[in-house]
Image 1 (cartoon, rainbow, N blue to C red):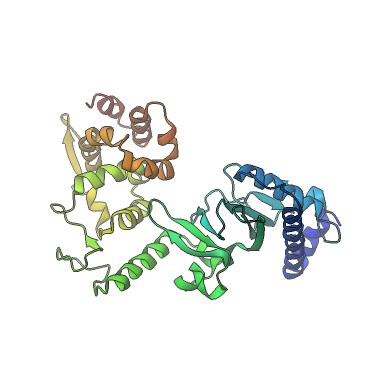
Image 2: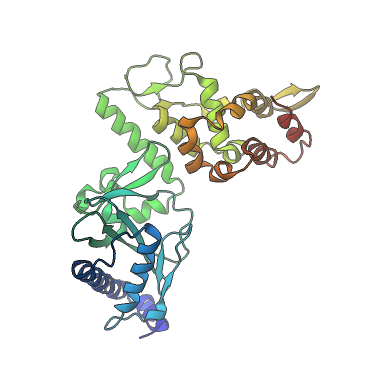
Length: 348
């Protein structure tokens, strides 16, 4: 049965097609475990090779399923998931070099998710065990929490029961979460509630007071919380979004990285309407960008911020001249202000 046939099955009966995919993944996992137990074939595997080995194993095990080898495609690279089967099914490959079934997973945003892939399984290799072992489950059933140190990524545990997944904790189904207009807002609400419970702080997120009632969760305070540094860091990490008045990721980063809440985020950059810069009136954010630029120039190579830059503004991280790259990111948002790029490049 070729691709056209499995797609026909899917269009007629998604559950029947999903059972066929589940069968393929069960056979693939059993095959890889058998190889691991009888040889050293997977010893020394890195992530790229494991994707390739999984791809080969899936093609080998299409017999007696509704799939043909030509249905299986290795995507890899910067796309999600790593392998696609017959348009609608996918496999994300993850592993640990230690003897454990846990690891850090992919971004919660799924901005690189391949169109039409509706059902994803996670195949996990425990490469530090003896013998090496593999497990495979529906993607959403392996995710137990969210890593919030730098940017929001799922945490994987292949042994958790379904009632302890992150989606069970947040009270939302995976598909509803990923297809929502603002999944980051859901995570932010969950994380704030988690902090409050852990610290037994009865402080609602919307409170508009300068009084800090929790030793961990702090309200934005212009004087006490180093606001200029935070504003510069966020403008460095999220230049395009902030210039477009999209503060969702920056607000989440501020909360999870520094445990700071700001209930009036727009005021940081756009309050004041228009301001005079070099004798002419411009949006208030232009003045704040110019004020932040000298500090941003210093922060670009701050050791403590390298992971933040890499995960939140990867093109900036890779740039040969980071400051010039950041200036270009910002100035492209204001083509009507021809002098902005020149002003920023003059900053010392």
